[in-house]
Picture 1: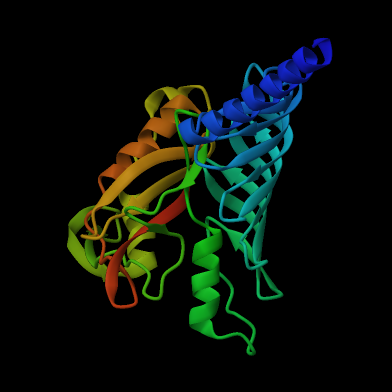
Picture 2: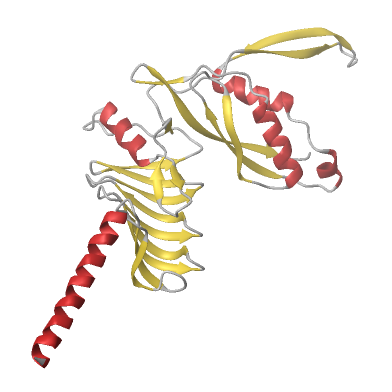
Length: 290
């Protein structure tokens, strides 16, 4: 009778544990399944099937770790307060990006597309693919590797696919043609009239910035200089959106850089496979005093 009672208790415990596991799967709740997911090393499984294995601090992903998506993509490297910092993002087909990240997007590093490694820098256009790699296949790979990630409120990480923001497209956005007015001077330095000249594309963008930046007076007085990197998105209609400081120098210089970028006229939008798409840009504005 005692043996039967013990057996019944063991079976009941086993059934209870099994039922609890089934319940967790049905409810799909976020759960720390091993270790310390507050201040230590632990494994956390998200309700969507994603998994993080690594270091934690104050219940945030901090330090070395590996985030694995349910479709077998993964990021392996360092995290700072739940966000990618320096590491490798692998696609399920073996292609990967390795380097530094900012705001959920690659900043600088290398892209490996079908065993061809090319450099990546958010501030410059990509190098051409090697002769043996199809150009469209190369662009598709780089676009898959240089997507923007979203850090969700439940601390899971997803790709921003709607609308998709590209880093490189078949037809990059173009700054519109603008007329810049210049003073005409006589031999004594007196203004005797004006002349205009048209600038287009990258040169037009550069001339527009030079013409419209106003050095903050307080920065002049204190001799403050520096280079400000500003990120923005050219939308499908060519408008400038999502303007933000990527790397600042001084609050007054940063504010002036933001003001100038936000004043940009509409671009000719970028196109991918014949369709207008959103394209991410980052440009530097250098503040110097003579």
